[in-house]
Amino acid sequence: QNYSLRVILKGDAAPVTISLLAPDTNNTLFKQTITTTTSTSYDTTALNFTHATATTNATLRIASTSTFSLGSISLTPQSNTWRGMRTDVVEALHSLSNHGLLRWPGGCFAPFYRWKIGLLPADERPPIETPPDNCAAQPGGIEAYTGGMMENGVAVDDFMALCERIGMEPA
Image 1 (cartoon, rainbow, N blue to C red):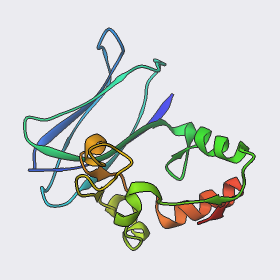
Image 2 (image 1 turned 90 degrees about the vertical axis):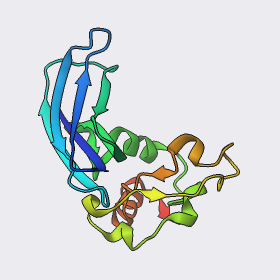
Image 3 (image 1 turned 90 degrees about the horizontal axis):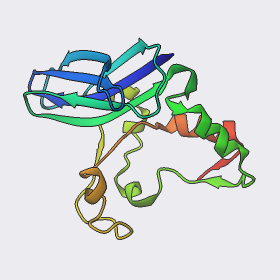
Image 4 (image 1 turned 45 degrees about the vertical axis):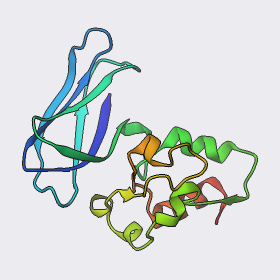
């Protein structure tokens, strides 16, 4: 199967090793070392690889001897993506009987979304940083489960295309 791996990170010009390990045995299914270029802005690395082993419980390991910040990561079969989104999820949304309004970005992240950044190419969109304790719906705020960072993967044009594809109105 062919896979696409996309990693967004920043660090102090140090090597970062990305490995995919088989469950239980920790045999390496994929391994690649990349080098971060700057600690002030995020770099995107897109990798494609093929592996004969099929598993649903592999471990993705990202490691370095230096400090780095992880913006976001995506690993998916190449046959299961549309505009960076999983096609099975898009089709599940389409199959819902509710074809009304689809709200985006929504939730606790909405006050921090900057639509102009959403017009940038995916590789240039930094993660969205949110302040601690800003979300009453989550004990400890967004910081409690995201470290205060949110992936900025869905752009304005992606959202509009999604609405059209699944038969919903943007809101």
